[in-house]
Image (tube, rainbow, N blue to C red; front, side, top):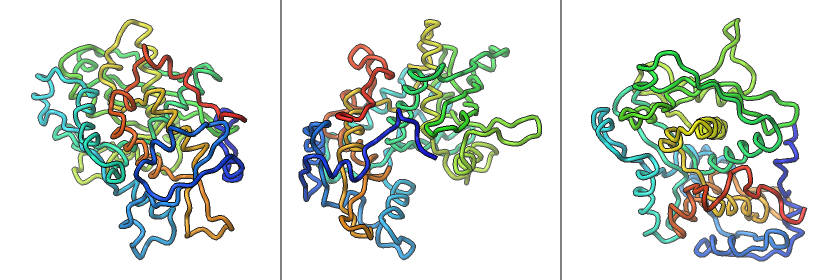
Length: 354
């Protein structure tokens, strides 16, 4: 089914019909993208963004296969949270401070050396399951939240709790309802577990446990809303097997968390925002991704089409976001500052000139 009009993007043909220039190397690519007139200009990249090692496997038959492999197995920045739960409880650091420190590594690298697709962390307590977050899922989730704010009644969240002691030490189980990007598709109904709501020293440990959980109906069946792939990912959040595959946070999780932030902010509670585990992109960072979606094509020799041009895959978009962080810094790209950026719903998510 087609996406809703709010999520409209330029097609390959529409980008080709812009005033197109070409670039043959990766170095300087971010400057080229930032310098585009989004209403009039396009860019064709004739350089491979995905590292070559993901194309050389006998199991890879196309660039799409290579991109999926890169997104799954590619370089990710490890976030060094305090190791033990006790250390976390004694720490005054926040997740955004941890990210800002880790991202300094990108600022010292040449643009074409940055192939990071996201971040990950693995707590040494609780479920001991790695959490993975591809960079591209941030602007996708933020855009979904903006759609909910502009075009619907918003992201619905239920943050009520009865056991104050448990909510303080383990976080709150929040029921969330997030709209879909697809026409005539039901909302995503799920839970976020271990959401820090009450201010206290336990929050840094709590947010490391954050994970989605499927909502089931009266017959024990999963409610409509999340895809089979996403349900499969969510299932890794249960049980105590230390060899579980990682929990991959999805755009819906970002939108739901932003719904929690908004609700609690309205009640003068900044705890969810202060403990936010996701890099929320600034207006500038989101605009770079918007240009990549609507103004940039890449040459792909594995295609059978005449021009062999396509839009960028999720892994390529993630790498370019990492390179933007490296060029401009964490605070300018991967940090939402409301006083500077305004409300997320007011970001420009449109296609310029359409």
